[in-house]
Length: 443
Image (cartoon, rainbow, N blue to C red):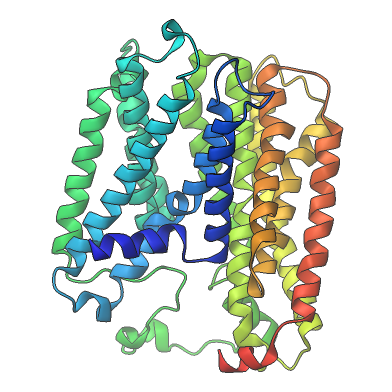
C-alpha cells in the first residue's frame, strides 16, 4: 500500500506542473458540480467534467509509461523485496482508480437530466471499456516508446489491428464489439502479457534519451574507427538533441502522422467527412506539440553547456532558441505535408480558409517550443495555465470549427495563440536571464 501512495505522488504531485494541473482540475470538477455554466448541455455538466478530469490525469496518462520505466530501471530501487511486482500492481491500481473516477464523474454529470436521457448500463460499460483500453494503450505504448520511438509505431499498429481486420472483413458495428466485453478482455490480455515480461526480464533498460553506454562496444572496430573530430557547434547540437537531428525528428513525425491518418480513416470514415476532418487535423495540430517535448529536453541538457562553451546565459539562450526553431520548422513541414494530404484527398474540403488553417495548424508548435525552453528554471503555476490555454486554442481554433463546418474563421483565437507565443518567448528570455549560475555549477 505504501508503494501505491508513493506512485500516486509521482503521478499527480511530483512536479510543479503536475501539482498545478491537479489543483486546477479538481477545482474545475467541484465548480462544475456546484455551478451550472452556460455552455454546458441542458441539465448536464459533462463538458466541464471532462475538462477537469483531463487536467488531472493528462500528465500521468501521457507520462505514466515513462515514469514506470524510470522507476524500474533504478537498480537501487529493485533491491527492495518484490519491487517490480509492487511497481506493476501500483501502476495498474492507479489506472483502475483513474478509470473509476472518470466513470463516477461521467455518471454524476447525467444525474440532473431526465431518466430517459441518462446512459444505460450498456453505455456505461462501453465508456468503461474505452477508457480502460485507452489507459492501457498509453501505459504500455509509452513504456515501450520511452526506449525506442520505432516500437511506438509498431505497437500502435498492432493495437489497432483488431479494428482494422474487423473493418476489412466487413463486420458491422465493430466499434461496439471492441468497446464491450471484448475490449475489456483485450486490455486484460495485454496487461497479462506485459506483466509476464515485466516480472521475468533480467534487466529493464533506462530511457532512450539518456547517454548510451559504449563500454560494451569498446572492441568493435566500427566504434574505434578514426572519425573526423566534431566541431564545437556539432558537439553541442548532438548533446542537446540526444544524438538526434532536426530532419530526423521531422521524418519520425511524418511517418507517425501518416500512420495515424490511415488508422483514423479506416476506423472513422463512417462518422462523416466533417467529423473525420476535425479529428485528423486536430491530431495533426497536437502533433506539433512534440516541439515542446524536444525543447524541454534541450533546456534540461543545456545546464551541462553553460560553463564549458564559454558563452553567457543570453548567448546560450539565443543559440538554443535557434535549435528549437529548426526542430519546429522540421516538425511543421511534416505536419503541413500530412495536412495537405487531408486537404487534397477529402471532399468536400474544410470550409475554413487556407490562409487561416495553415497558421492555426502550426502556431501551437511554436507556443509549445517556447514553453519547453521555459522549463529550465522556475517551473510553476504559469506553465500549467499556458499549457491549458494551448490545448483550448487547438480545440476552439481548429477542432470545433471543423466539426461544425463553419466557414467563419475564429481569427480572435488565432490572434490569442500568436500573443501567447510572443508572451512565452519573453518569459523564456526572462527566465534564462535570471538563471541561477551557482545551481548550474553544482548540477
